[in-house]
Image (cartoon, rainbow, N blue to C red; front, side):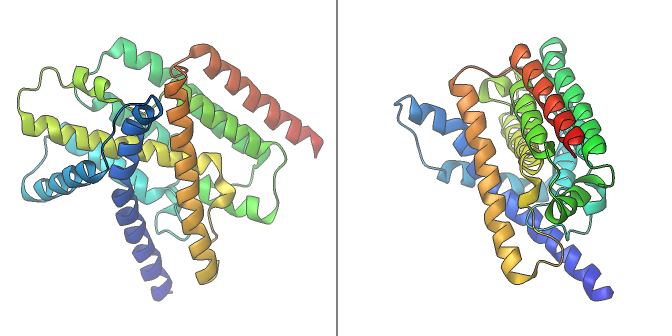
Amino acid sequence: MMMAVLFAVAQTLFQCVLLLLLTPLMAWMLEELPRWVNGEAVSGPVRHVRRAGLFWRAAFRQPLAPGMALVLAVSLLSLAVLPAVTTGGALISLANPLLVGILLLVGRLMLGCPSLRDEGRRVLPAVLVLCLTEALIALAAPGADGLGGLCAMLHIEPVPGLEGALGACVLALAISCPPLREDDMLLRLDGMKDRAARDMARQVAQVLNFAWIFLLADLALPISVGLRDAGLSGWFVGLAALLARVLLVVMVLVTLRLTAQERSERLTALFAGVALLLALAGRFAT
């Protein structure tokens, strides 16, 4: 029993470290891939990795501002709670998509000085889609307990319509509330005069963005998460699946940005409706 608990804690710590290592790489892809597709010159990820290293070094040496520290804590908690490689994490029982999603959206509102009107138009539809996602999971998989239980249930018996409905919900969330851009951060940090504080806020935003991407990736392909007792081979398969689904979500976000379909209320409503229809069709087909 003690060994199982220690293994779960070790897996959670490894998961957090791995995801934090991926954070600057995903931030680089979100920032540079649209420019590369448009034919602009782009730089490598070294600058983002170096800035992330400097941020964590400074964060361990001096305390962050209270609001920024709270946003970072929410982001780190989300990375620790959500299933990454397998469902064997120590905090998997807390992996409720509605709870984690709302925490991340609240953290988004707390970062810097956002325009409440503009952010409200992005956050409110995302909250509604998260509520719809939770309702669809309860409808199509009533025995699932959070994302961990959903992953296990889908491995045992696929639920018709639910996986497609979750994919549509992820698209609705990606459209309604995409990750914060550089120009978004410029507006939020306009009144912050300390350059070091602005740089730290940007790094916190990158962690927050990646936690949101990670949530979308888990919702999009929950069946790709390995089970607790998958063994060594299953663990490596789960690791490869983690990288694949995160890259898939990043590609979708980049495509939405290139096609100027971000923050489209019509598309958000469209995919939310598609998700509901798919879930109902799968429910009544069984």
